[in-house]
Image (cartoon, rainbow, N blue to C red; front, side):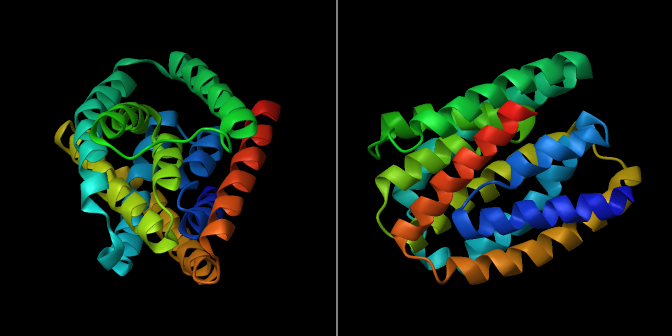
Length: 238
């Protein structure tokens, strides 16, 4: 039953992310730790998400804005290393408390500020947002909201927004995954869970991309804000 739930949650998360640009980590990391160890859920999400974001980034590669992408992705690689080491240094009880606090902060942002905060694309703002995203990504794999807010504000084209966002996730997720591998955190016992997560992710991604092709940029923004509010309400209630 664990494998079925793993696949179902992965499908839901990948559908949301491929149609709106983010959401996979929030959904998976809010539910998977309920029936598997926190460390396992974090590493599993990193691996499964990598294949999803690579697929989307390659599919939309011609629309990637490299100038806007480079500052945050470089900074995120540095702070991601710090996040991973913080993750492995703390016990699950402390991690759960920190995770709860982070999720409450995110929930408040989603509900009250997500539609009001605006960023201008630039080197300084890109480095600042990348630093926060990288650390949260390394610690909990939830580095998406800062980058979504940044790219959504700085871009007017939906293909450019999603392509650049998924390119960021590709580079950042690969960096975090390699840190886990080199530090010996990935084990053979995770393979069955990986297979279940990847199967669900493939199904959800196909459905989400079909929805994304039908959306306008205004529709993408509406989908992002709707998901943020729903996620915020869910996180507060749980």
